[in-house]
Length: 278
Ligand SMILES: [Fe+2]
Ligand SMILES: [Fe+2]
Image (cartoon, rainbow, N blue to C red; front, side):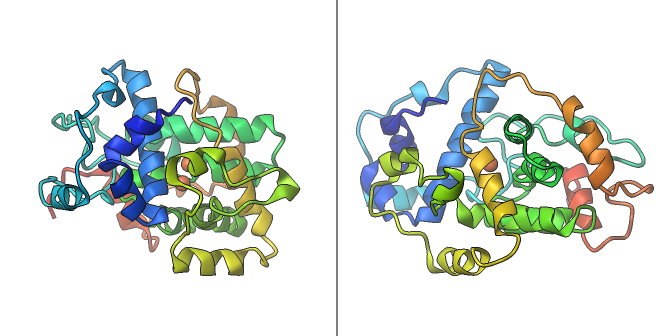
């Protein structure tokens, strides 16, 4: 996917403002920018990135923008559409919803990206747990984006093998660190967009130092390998190729996700019923 540097930096409030952001926030902004482009390609909406401001705002203006925004950036895509449009009424969920139902009826803003990622993992001959981790790695961004690796792992923990939730949790931190053994380099895209002096915050660095020595390190690493290059706005993707893998590794509760009394059932209900006020 082509990313126009100026357009992206403009969206952050200009290069100075981008320099002031911490690295995690900038990477999240980039991922969100790419997802927005993908969704636009899917819906045929006008290209948001073609709208260019006449001049860069100052840092103070950017800081002031926080209080002019109707939402905080960490809030999930399904709760606050970034298009500025009104939300739409969602189709009802079946009584005992499965993972497929969530893909079909609720993961509207993230499914294209994760399906592409899982597709790439499959093409690259990854083992099934890695393909599953790729398929699930970003969908929690429907409800929350801040620290989405940790939230995402929690959402899936009761239903997937332990190494799959491990991979989902730590893909977020590993994307900043090269690993030549699998051909993963710190992406030029990040260097180009964020500058060479890009330093992740201390909790990400500390997490990386722990995870790189873990026996399952490579499981998390391979999610980042199949994640970064997975953005193609023209790709037509479907969940069909992954049905058997889900069947073998995802423990679908018979009562339905959200109804099974698991420690994370409320998270599934939150995705299923986002218009519920309390
Ligand atoms: Fe991610
Ligand atoms: Fe991703």
